[in-house]
Length: 337
Image (cartoon, rainbow, N blue to C red; front, side, top):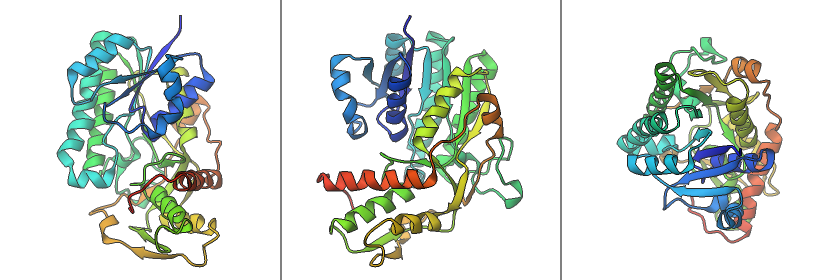
């Protein structure tokens, strides 16, 4: 019998890459959950298959609407669930804290409650975030799973709730729910509200003559460990297929660490206009408080599954920049942000 996977947030960067991975590496049916108003740019290459009913199917639902979740789960009856949907922009959460908390904490609870009642045997991945650790003292580096939470944004607080709700359903009901705290991951299709993606987009726009050769930036001093989104989705697949343990939680991330400033310098160095580009602090891009030391210890997950990253930092950043060059070159209009 064919396995069925349900991906919430299928139209996002991670969801779309996960759909690609499952279509290429498994014979599963891939069911994507999205809101009726979700942009389809990231899944445009899948739409012919969706229209033809060729192993990939889209379902409209919203984490804030229990009835729609009930309908989707009842229709699909998934064997595997990858819960990726969220209000996922940390900076936006300062302006919309209630929406962020409602969507990410209560939305996750609504989904898990439907799954508990409809398909309690499903294997479920709940995606939290490394942002739960927030402002970590250097003494706790690298960050292991039991480092205390110190969230630095409403988004991070919401992901603490997401993390705990997921673990609760695993512990209380014996559901095979596993929670991940994925550290910084990026690549093609990354939203332009994230630092590395807005930098790459601005470089592509500069090269196309659309904006002056000035890159607007926020805090450049934060340390990040970088992973590729394509490594991330492979990790998520292994999470649910390699000896899944109810209630477990894992840090996942890359192996290359550098500051936001170093990452920006790397992207600029890839541009033929590198000698003309300058950098300017934009106060609008600064968060009230920042998670500034995001370096993971991924020993637990790697030992359990055998996963290891395959994409280099250079490959990831190069592919991200080429993604934006392609979009700008194709004439897609962009906000200057």
